Length: 90
Image (cartoon, rainbow, N blue to C red; front, side, top):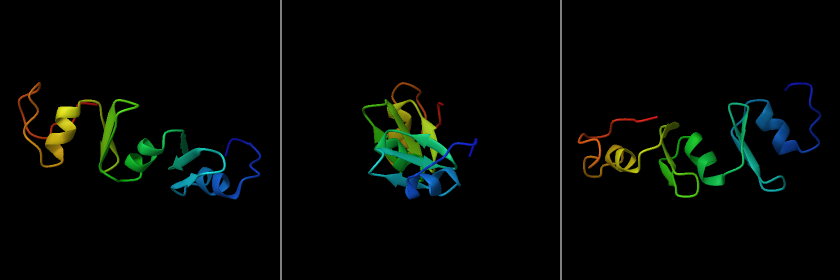
């Protein structure tokens, strides 16, 4: 935990490796890494989600920057830009 003191119990748990969102501090942790975007937190935690704000999606915790590829991996049509189904473009 890099020697930082954490007064918030949720953030302490997050820095210790628990996937947790802290409403009080407005941030979340996945595998001890902080994220400030709630949608990206959900994605990093394993939920299939696209974040318009950050321009990235997540499938099984893996980040995808192409929305067409994200949609293809979630049962949508093949990506029109990359012409294939579900390929992950980091």
